[in-house]
Image (cartoon, rainbow, N blue to C red; front, side, top):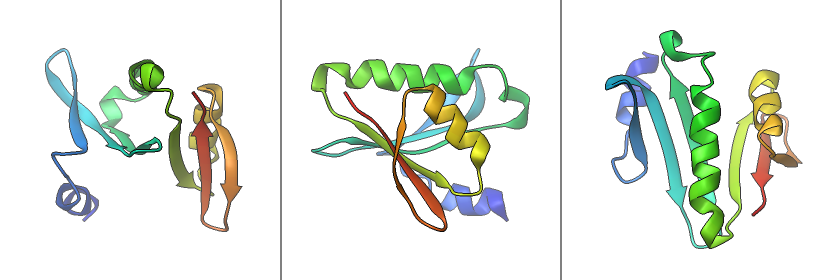
Length: 108
């Protein structure tokens, strides 16, 4: 069911297939807005997790946005402390907390 939900949300304008050595490894979704970039999702298949691929993707995104001076924003589930710590290590700060979500930003 989860694969179907994710598959139905795929938008070629914002989503990219992540390839590792030519093999599909996951999905990266980024929406470019006038005021900022919105990191919508990074999903990696289990075989590609814990290999620093997510870190490399975020670093590439940070590097690509540098010339525009736009911040990068994202949200994670409040219960997902692993994701929150990951993004904090990547330089994101918490800007808002709701019962369900933690909103974060990495300023230019």
